[in-house]
Image (cartoon, rainbow, N blue to C red; front, top):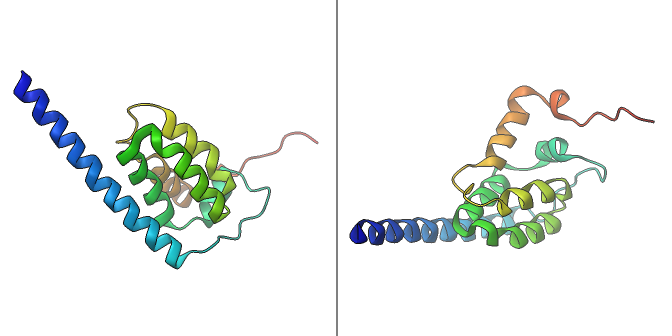
Amino acid sequence: MEEFLQNFVLILLSMMSVALVLAIILLVIIIIQIRRINVPPNAGFAETLLYTPLLVVLFLDVLDLALDFLSAPIAWVVLDRLGLKGLRGVATVESLIPFTQAIPVMTMSWIGVRLFGKDRFIEQKYYE
């Protein structure tokens, strides 16, 4: 039992280390290629995802896999610098929920918005 636990922890730490290196590489690529994304100031989550490149959502999911809840402040700062304020809340909440790092929530959301169309996901204002 002790050997199993030791192997499990070793594999988990190795996977998290590889994910962290991949997240750093993606961040460097994002910084070089994408300085700032012009998103309308009142854009919600789905509309912001339409303007977001795939590399950014992959970075967020890999960072969450590598650091779990510690990725929340890093994701907040990166999204703020890129001008993606509509994604900050969802990325932060998803990062703070424990044991969800294996689920690529942001990537699935990005694919969902593109597959099902923006009209279904754009937040409707039902008040005046």
